[in-house]
Image (cartoon, rainbow, N blue to C red; front, side):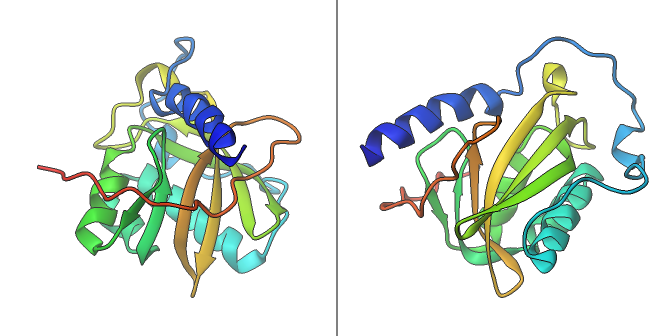
Length: 176
């Protein structure tokens, strides 16, 4: 059953990973726009939410190295692939660079040991979000020592449960 859940989530994540969706008008300055007053509805550990928001803001601004510094090493990531264990700062940076979209934090909720964050996808310097701009995506985060230790893409929607800690981790893919 655990495998079936992972396969279902992997299929949903692959749709989100491609950032597909209807073409929407975009603003070149969208990554620089400040959050709306009052901010998004947040539920979760305040320190974790601050790290998640900082990660999203940093990546959206095109600072891949800065976004990567917010990750623990090692870290587990899953974005339409089997879970991967990133064992070095270089692998963490490559993972962040591979994300085609920026993201603006909309809301968070605490679920078990994860903080699930829902984002509105945006363009970002160095990325190519394309038709995904304006779509939503969700990620389950688990932090360790104030850094992102798990980054697991999950389907969006009400009542969606986050993934439990993956039982097995695939070796990281090499980036040339």
